[in-house]
Image (cartoon, rainbow, N blue to C red; front, side):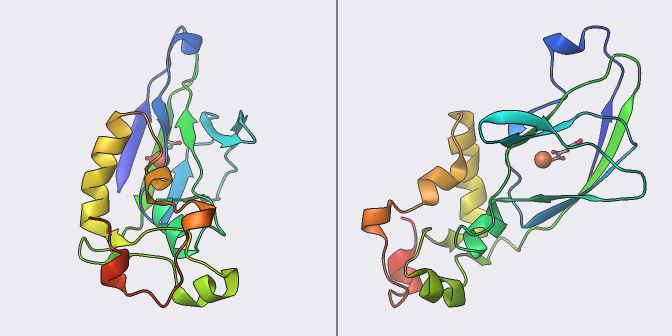
Length: 163
Ligand SMILES: O=C(O)CCC(=O)C(=O)O
Ligand SMILES: [Fe+2]
């Protein structure tokens, strides 16, 4: 769980509350104190994800995109700060154990006719993620197979594991 406190900022256009990122787990449930700030990347543009009183905002993360073999997209998001009002959010993230294998569900792979992501231990993914993110890249780009190199689900998990 993470609690985020964004104090009012006299020059909100000069800074961000949180830099653009993708969440790592499956789902993040977010409670917001009904002050705008969250933005999601949609078709190349930042779009406000406005809070509604009494509702959770649900953010899909990288684990969900891999598990769903790419059907559900992990959303890039960031936060802005507000000139007059403080903003408080509480984010509860689901993430698997480090020893869990992060891999597409085989039922979907069969239906989709191919594996869209390499599989690896979630703990190893988190280590890899640190390096990739420090280079300013999206971790799933590294795990994704190119369309022409996709392997079939009959391949064993060991063969598929990232070195
Ligand atoms: O504070 C927010 O609106 C977003 C928080 C967030 O993205 C996170 O904790 O990963
Ligand atoms: Fe986030």
